[in-house]
Image (cartoon, rainbow, N blue to C red; front, side, top):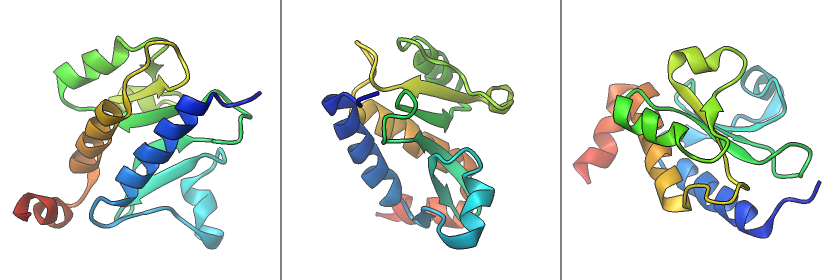
Length: 134
C-alpha cells in the first residue's frame, strides 16, 4: 500500500513539531517496545506518550492519535473524515485517531495544534511551563 505524498508530508511535519516540544522524544533501544507495542512511531514527553503517529511505510493507513480532553477539540477531531475513538481501549481516555490520507483530512497545522494540546494534557507541569515562558 503506497502512502499518498501529501499524507507523508503531513506525517513529517507533525512528527517534527511533536519532537520540538519540551522534553519530547521517540523511545529507542530495548525500552522502545514498551512504548511501541504495535510498531508505530510514538512521541512521549517525560514518560507519557502524547502522540501516536502510526507507521510511514504504507503497511497500515497513515493516521495520528492524540488525547483531546477539551470537549470542543475532541468533537471537532471526530468530525474529520474516518476519525474514530482510538483503538486498544484508548478511546475511552479521550484519545482520537485521525487518518491523514483521507480526502478532507485536517491540515498539518491543525494536527500540530492537537498534538500540542495532547502534550499539555499529559506532560508534567514543569515541561508545560517551558513553552509558556517563551
